[in-house]
Length: 328
Image 1 (tube, rainbow, N blue to C red):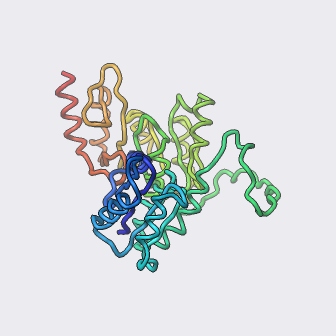
Image 2: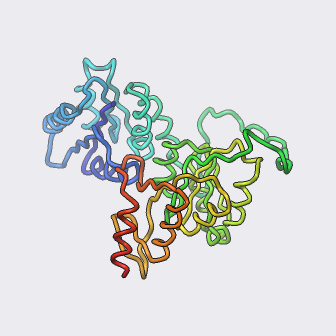
Image 3: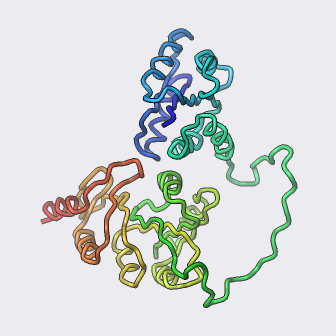
């Protein structure tokens, strides 16, 4: 695995490392190296060399720096000499860039390849709202004319094998947020994210925010439970790879009861509220939740209890038993 060094002025590298691991999970072979106001170049150089020495793979090293021309970059440039064939430095470090680096090194052992890829991601992470404030890319080609609308796919059309593919079905009270839009999307590669919620489907503001939060190349839809049940049976979705997001296990059970071919539920986070007990650092269960998970288990549903792909799996049976005991 490519080793990653995050280098910055002040505590920025430590902070962005913590932020990236909140989204993508704990990461091996990632070190933050910071230049404090009281330190000089030589002290930073020593910390940088020690950090590289701590990596399990010192043949492939990627250094992400905050600023071109600053001390962290200058000392990294000095350290990279003699390793240019396998090491790389990228400046302008931001959160989308780091998360993409984590994802890319799962499939690539080439620091140069990852460096080239994450430059594009880092630039794409700079967006404005309102979108009208976004500057045009210099030298960009004129926008192509909008394609002619083809209309809805006729009812009864069969795409693929006629059965929608569920690459992930997740229970998460926060629905579509950073961990889902980045870590899980990269892990399971859906082409559509479907938020299944009666409440959100009828809340125009929340619905709009969720649709805007979809990562590039993935469409997000918010539908009520009844609509999801129709979609699950519609052969026009046979070529769709869907990630389903439920606010609670009760909504998931309704869709499964109606015939959706869901074999496994990823349990991400369930917020604490009155009448619920906390059973781990992300999940709180009430009596209705306990009964719902029992019904799901009776149906043969498997549980994958993780906030992010890098987390170790928790045991749902143990969590349900803990909640049941505390709720008596």
